[in-house]
Length: 263
Figure 1 (cartoon, rainbow, N blue to C red):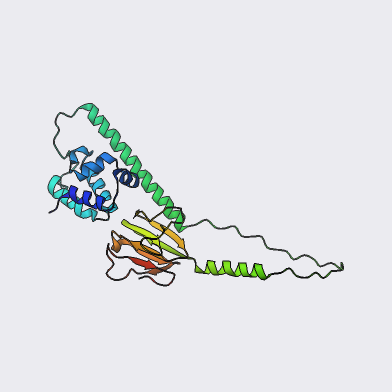
Figure 2: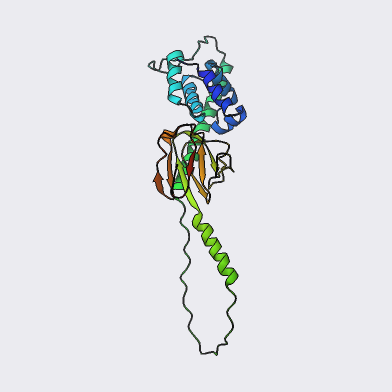
């Protein structure tokens, strides 16, 4: 048995997260986040929302969401009972309060539906990229009998050198694909304190990211994963090749990914 609220608050403060940032990342209102940390479950619309917010917030912090839901059920709610009952009895609730709670519940449902829709669109865009238009075939021109003049070929030293440099740079670039159903992690380049890695969609990952689908990173330098909340739910692929995390990877591990290795 453990205290739900203090455990959530300690995890948030350990990551240095403000309530405003948690609200922006999880779409859970700030007053509900505070209510979870203070175990004031009567503030939430009902047991279903309480358990949903509790699971989402715990997994966002890299914790086991099911463990918190089970503790909530054992102390505040019996899931075997049909229907949702208020966590604390309120026989004289005012009609205005009930209407406000219904409005808040509708807003929460709309926000959750929007998050699911956006996540599905991102997953489809990454899985099925649009086809690139092909260039039309080049038709060879008919030779003519006009006299030709011989001109010295242009100097190709600088262009050849530039092309070789670009090809060498392109050859070093590789793509890392990270997939999870719910895993908090930080992603940098070169080292755990190096520059923040950025997804192909332009999302920075150095300050921490709650991965709940699939993201793609393209880089010419090593990619470094740290502060991994749930390593067991994370899969890694480099240039389409699946690569397993090192044995014993935990939340305190630092994982380096290059084109050919993961360690």
